[in-house]
Image (cartoon, helix red, strand yellow):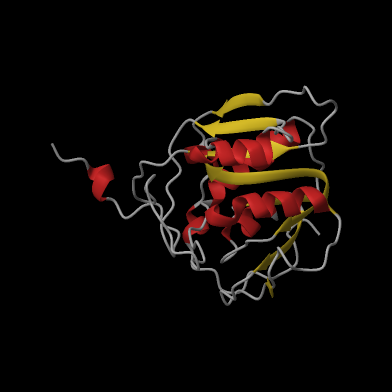
Length: 220
């Protein structure tokens, strides 16, 4: 029996990227808006908070974040959108309130450690739900630094390699993992589902080709 998900060009759960891959899979803005609304509604972040996005790609996450916060974007590769080009892992250490990003999957642990060192209020990563698995990540991250919240998307978030597109299917599940200051070592992560929200949060303009997104934040 055929299965369209198995032949889709969207991101698949079993995908493997080369060691030197840019991991070019832009995040749909509606998925970022879902996080922003959760953070604001639950008082985890303030309006106009300063947020660093260190793997900004073509700026699709930046565009959504700037609807709520003041964003400092950068990426190791120049995608032609005017953002700072720098390697987040080796850049000058500067403390910031929040780091929100879709990290390169193969470097997610390194991004996590760097973000936790530099973020005074919180870190939020958009990752494959499979990121929560593996003994290596448990020992390297979760055993000693439990997230405060895990937000599992109840509907599939479709990512395409090298582009943002409104259509497609995927076999991959995604979630937001959030770390805020830990009050005590025994604190356990709060697991919540993100209710279906794509139709409510998606905009036609989300899929327009970005021209030059390094413009002032919308809320400044």
